[in-house]
Image 1: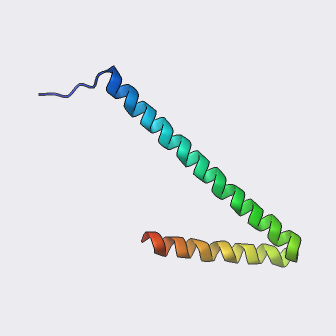
Image 2 (image 1 turned 60 degrees about the vertical axis):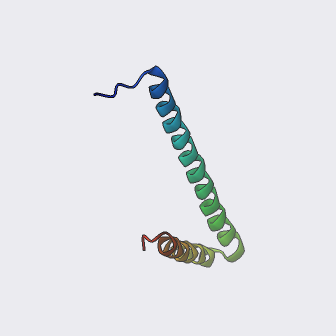
Length: 72
């Protein structure tokens, strides 16, 4: 017996995909705003040295994230 999705099933799957895509865009926008704020704050507080500090902090956070999620 073959499964043939009806219009309701397809609509629900499309709605779920749209919601996941929207959530991903919101999360990446939030992450991007934090990264920009980190670099701007570092630059305003410490000048060029602050950019290096911000970059080092991002590398540290990425390592922690990788270890915490099992990808590192």
